[in-house]
Figure 1 (cartoon, rainbow, N blue to C red):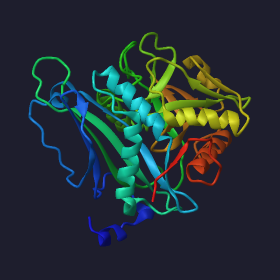
Figure 2: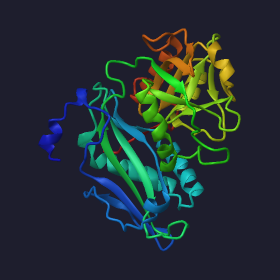
Figure 3: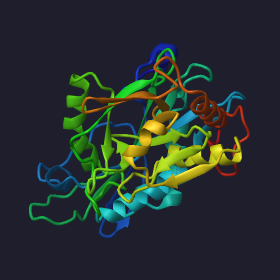
Length: 345
């Protein structure tokens, strides 16, 4: 894309979709080691039809954002946690973990190279980064790949909610998101493939998302297809579901820290029984894309749970959490040490 074309981007009206940018970071693994890695302009990948990623879904990914702060810096939010989570995901799928320090270097390199695509402060838009790793050599017998490709591409995206975050309606799913002792706690492409059929069905029925219960007893709240869940009690405490099959959301962990250390709230990270949910005051879904999506109503096979905050706007406690965390991300509020990584000029 030319500089002129970049200048034509309507930052205030961007959707949440892919726009090709100038550079992506690419690093390849062969003969037991990663190569030097670097920036490439080619957005295409050429692979054998028998590549392991096509046959046995050996694929992991991450998602994070770069922002322009109020004082004009370009920063990323806690990329060290993305690096660690991606290494954990790779280990679980018999892939070589990408070195965590090299991950941070790659993030800085690719954001700096695509600086013209980082939206201006106040536009509501950000630069979304998608690191991913795939098994690339031909594999026909069921076994791990021996060669891999790690890439990061970036794309400018608009705010997840245009016109503000209105509360959504979710449904209790009849499907299971993950199996006990399975891969629910890693960010693997196969987990998201599992959720596609249920989310399409939910959308057809008029719901924004599925809320999944634990697959073993179907009595405890886990997460949605793409986000962790938070609850606010009548006493103003933050409660987040705990389970070995929940993805350890970086946004959720950051919200818990903000709640406790910035807002003085009591935080409970524990098993949450679905029978408790009608007693909560507020509910939200948290993740990189939207930060927090407020939930106004849960539909459970004809039974409806309405949260007191209602369907008009984000609940007051959730709003404080949202405003504080986004304020930290955008540089309006002082961040805890190490949370904000500046992209070197």
